[in-house]
Amino acid sequence: MIALRKVLKYLRSTIDYGITFGGKRPEGLIGYSDSDFASDRSDRLSILGNVFMLGGGLISWASRKQKSVATSTMDAEYMAMCEASKQSQWLSLVLREMGAPELIGNHKFKPTVKEKTKFMIGSPVLIRGDN
Image (cartoon, rainbow, N blue to C red; front, top):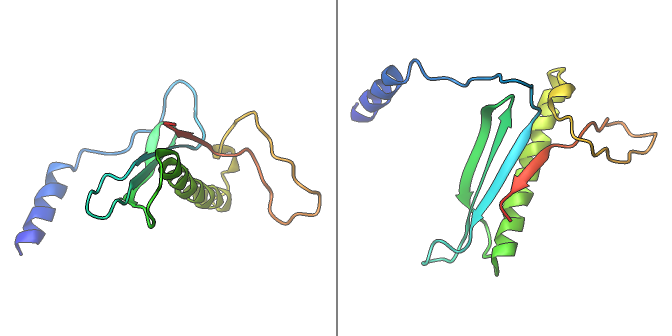
């Protein structure tokens, strides 16, 4: 009951909060990735994190320990970027299935696609890392 009261108190105090979409120009899906190299001294696992924004509003975020020990900061950042790229592919698929592929991105890079592919690749998702 104590936990339920805390949840209800939180919901009541944040009822006016929300995600704001908008701005001067509509932005497509964009991601940010980061890693904290070997931050836990007991098991030497790094912590990874990523966030994804759509139209200036936050739509997806994650933070967790990496599954294996990174041997360098580059290795930890690479693992974090890999997780972010997996999430970007899932979000892209959701946007395509919702009928909004134009929200995936308007980046200049266009991948080369063979003619007989079943899956249509549009613009890639921009993911920014701090490395």
